Length: 266
Length: 267
Image (cartoon, rainbow over all chains, first blue to last red; front, side, top):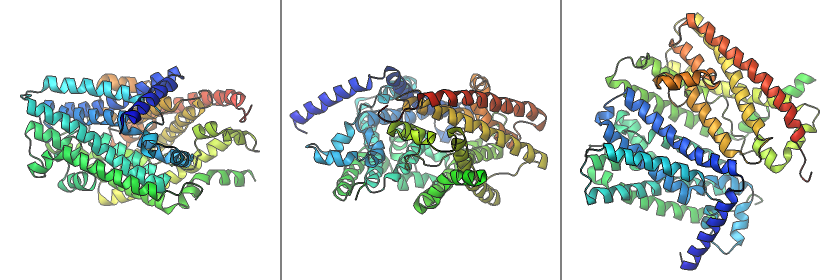
């Protein structure tokens, strides 16, 4: 992206923030929804942690790292790339056709459609949980470990973006594919926040290889805390890299789908 | 004639589903995967624990799986058909609800009834499969089954009014996506869809007790698994009935006020 393009992105984002503040109550509720969504993950995780101690052989301080990585990655995804969630609606309303006529990449226009106010709430709660998890952690946070944690959060964000960009590419052809996006979000929220070794092997395998949810936070947290997983160490350690590769692949899929886009009117 | 009109209105959303087999396949796949995942999760969690929060392993698994099945009752995708109240308000097509020879209130109720009956078919199919596979346990006695059915009926009635209130909000606020999401989230969390309410802290259970959400699902499911004894069920059924009555009165008033807010595009 050139400097000029960056400047345009910045100016459009500022305008989007002003636009979203037109309805003040909605603006504040939007922040609240982000926070509440994240709180639900915390409530669910803490309820399970409190009732079922030593979950999967993990200490509660280690387990907390999983939702912390996942939620911070999710917050960043919502802030930077989250508008792919609404492709189905934009196709339905004929907006993609408008984007195709403008001198800016369609993907960027989709991301600049509005400001994701809820990301403020998402990130606030996620940052709080990460601070709490790090505070309770007994690990030695060396520069290497901190660097890997940062890479894991970015990799988790990219992996989540890859999954939803894949769904968005399908939406360009079948807008009702949105349904799968909602399910995916629900699965990530429900099963992405604790050690997957509490599940039977077949189910854990499904959440690793069919739906790579384990690579978002579980494997990186296992690498950081030194827990064994069902996959070789090198594969678990490569999670952040896998996120990057998956995102690049998903963008390729998006470009292909956009090239075959026919619009709602054929 | 009224029955014919009613039937035609009630079958709109289910017909939309029946005409799109891929969507039904998606529902089947999603339901199957969700049931397997939820059952595996609770069994895994109970692997090293006995009775927790008054629930045994089988009770917890049955509760969680039934919650997944029950959530199918009102989960039809109206958005793809531009048929949510929010979309009708956005596109101005809500005005057609007021031009038909059928009051909007009745039209809405008939549509919801059709959706709930269609969802019920899915839930019953899923229940039969889960029961045959031994994923869920049958109710302890015929009396428990009977009280559960009555409680479930009242719960669905409360759920109808809760969803109606959410839709009615769209008449009064220009932008309310967030409020809708918050309330849908509260409904799921406080009814026990995410996790049985018995696992939550006491203050959370007390808070849920004064809100209508737990009456939709937690009460019937707790009766089914035996967490609420039949001797205590009477009080819970009375609470559910009270919510039905209160919400019926409120939503009736709101329909009247909503009608005054409707304008066609352009004024």
